Image 1 (tube, rainbow, N blue to C red):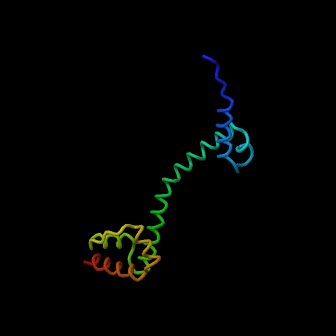
Image 2: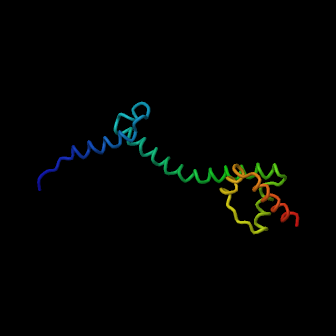
Image 3: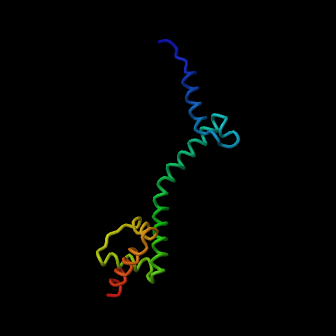
Amino acid sequence: MPRVKTGITTRHRHKKVLALTKGYRATKHSLYRRAHESMLKSLSYAYRHRRERKGDMRRLWISRVNAASRAQGLTYSQFMDGLKRAGVEINRKLLADMVVREPESFANLVTIAKGKVQD
């Protein structure tokens, strides 16, 4: 078998890594070994934070619904309990959107929840 030189393949791999780390500080964008380490770390952060973002958004929705329901005279837990007892199945994303875009319909939901909590 003839000997295979891998210079071209290695150069392409290195250029791909250096392109991914473009804009990084110091040697993290220019030296291959440092760039490869920072690339692996940044890609793992990106993967992890894509999953964390889901929880961040849920916390944001809950805090918006909590603030709006407290303005109407109910805590968040009382409001959600009232909706559950009334059989209203709306997720937190839609509730938070309703708080921002349709406050009068959200106020109607709060009155429904109040009626069921006091029963």
